[in-house]
Amino acid sequence: MDSGDTAWLLISAALVLLMTPGLALFYGGMVRSKSVLNMMMMCFGAIGVVGVLWLIYGYSIAYGDSLGYLLGDPGEFFGLSGLMGPDSAGEYALEGTVPASVDVAFQAMFAVITVALIAGAIADRARYGAWLLFAAVWATLVYFPVAHWVWGGGWVEEIGTVDFAGGTAVHINSGAAALALAVVLGRRKGWLKEPMKPHNLPLVMLGAALLWFGWFGFNAGSAYAADGVAGIATVNTFGATAAAMLGWLLIERIRDGHPTSLGAASGIVAGLVGITPAAAHVDVWGGLAIGFVAGILCALAVGLKYKLGYDDSLDVVGIHMVGGLVGTAMIGLVATEAIDGENNGLFYGGGIELFGLQLVGAIGVMIYSFVLALIIGFAIQKTIGFRVSEDVEVGGIDENEHAEVGYEFGPSGSRRVAAATSAGAGAGPKTEGSKA
Image 1 (cartoon, rainbow, N blue to C red):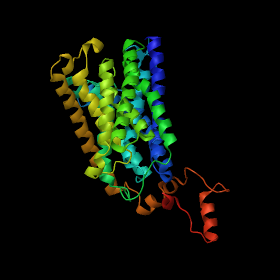
Image 2: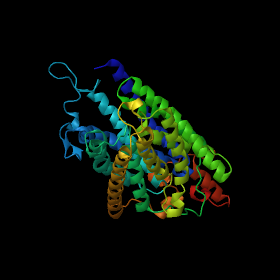
Image 3: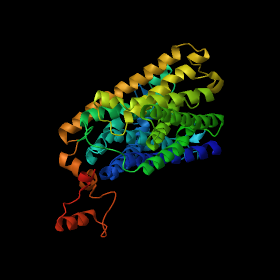
Image 4: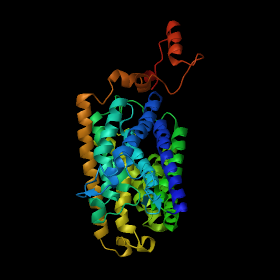
């Protein structure tokens, strides 16, 4: 055991955990005010559901002995058996140079945020209990096995697909599931007919800042050591993200005539997504290229929903699935053995083979996640119901699902009392739905 590596991974676990509340702020600011609490609760709910399942059997499915390169043995580390306490000699189980328990905690945060990312696609219209059920089933049948495919000795890792910190396992995986749920739940009432602008852009910017901050743990922590690899990942995480923000703002300036704060925040996330699989496999030029291309292509991709007709509320597909594909595929172009000692992409004399392997892994994960999410989503919709009623959607999902509102108005501190007073004075009651 190395105390420096252990300390760094503990810090990284905390940084990655912070990303999910950061995502809650990012997503929460982008929805209408009547949905902000529900959106944030969907993110926080993922921490509870996925966190518990990870400790019971998720880690074992992801990192237990491989069963046919498809999943780990669920019983090997069930309840973290053999990983939490010292053995008879007083030694702790290790993962590399860190205690296995620290690895469990670090990887738990990846599982949590992967599920939370999906929630942005179905903002404003999902029943909270149904969402928690989906989170549990999808994590069990999709995320845990896919983590094994990519990092635990499964088929994606076995064929040679490179994914340093989660381009396939996290972003393509969640983006494909988001697309499936957008299909299952259908469009929001009033989509393309009513304004559905973000209600609080400062929250969005704050959320993006916390995501960027936490992402250093996400990427540099994946080095599993406080060493030069972590340093390379840190530099690329910074550089690619900066380039992606500029790329997104450039597209906005050309297309719309003005750069926006929402575009800057979205570009930041696109860059973080794009560099995730490549953070320790590319040099500065490769990192900047991945970020810039991700910023441009994701900015263009978010418009696909209007052409294809799916209502991905907060652009999970356009940013995470597309950004993950960009970063994963570009490893096959700009990876260099001068950085990782092993892989050369096409532009560095490595031929086309790595690029092909990157596409095989990415497409395999994308198809599996989409199909399983579609099946799970339809099953929930046809049994307990996934989508809220039209009245709930229009009136405000926060008040109906959680008996709370994000913002209280009126001298009494109660929006309902203020509305009743207005109605008694002859003015119509003001509801969140009518204001939106």
